[in-house]
Length: 247
Image (cartoon, rainbow, N blue to C red; front, top):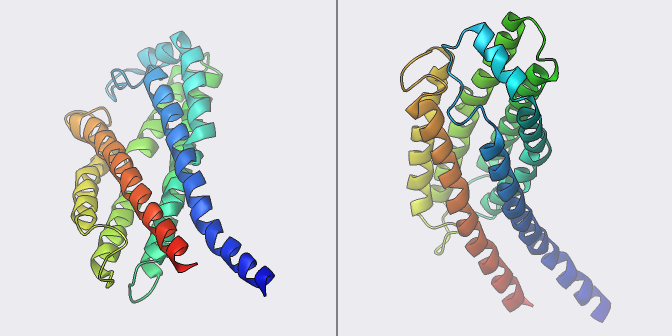
């Protein structure tokens, strides 16, 4: 009988332990990704869509080493944020909603986002792999990288709307996430949505190097990750306390 009780306790503690590990992984990988972001010379300032092919090719030829370093780090560590988003999914599944479909929609959006992020990294890497290529080919790879990195925002918007709806539908007296997380998620989604214009504009705030498509998008996404890290920390800590009290 004692063995059965101990086994049950161990099984209940595993989800919380895994979530703590996932949050710590996100913290470390986030710091590494920040280093990669600051190391990529194409972000400070962002490479202009208006640059001619010769100047774009020169950029990849002159900064090959730093481009390769930053993109390899992005490629290795970008996926390491997935555990962070999976903790959100786990907590959404704990919400008292009519079904768990919103959690699975969030999961699908997170997977799609990481995949597109990895593809953009690879495009930058391919452009820097042989910088002696025809400048027109380098320009094509550069366009692909930037547009894939900036323009696909649908999955992020859907993620945030699903999260907001789940928070609002959580019927528990004390919801898993604070109610303000719903409004916060919608605002972040609305701030990121205009970046879709990066696929159509070469100049102005909606171009991939513009104030809206680049700086607002990245700033809003980073703010979401930071704020949700602390929200998740509180939710997992509360879950841990509730499981301890139930033993």
